[in-house]
Length: 160
Image (cartoon, rainbow, N blue to C red):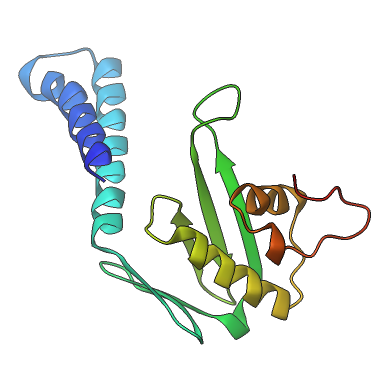
């Protein structure tokens, strides 16, 4: 979170200072203002993540904080685990778990403490609901060490 705050603050300073300290051409002002809005939104999202608390229960998962989201396991409709790489060789980066219910969506990134346990519980709920997992999600679950939870059809290669 500290790095995200630093990135938002640095970006806002870099584009905000010229906006208030110098007279710029209209197009430059518009571009700087647009970039400032993007950094403000990124900062707001970081604040929301900072204050969010994830509660995992037998009946579902809840996010409490500045905005609240709740998905009951019986309402789960979609589970997707995506990998976002920071290098060309796909090493490094983070995972992002998307859970969607009837009317709610919850996105959780792998920086969260006990992320593998949370992902495992979500996979169990998805299997109980017979939700089909896409190949990328299966591969990412295997990389996370949850291969024992993934029921693989015979046509798919097993986890390595």
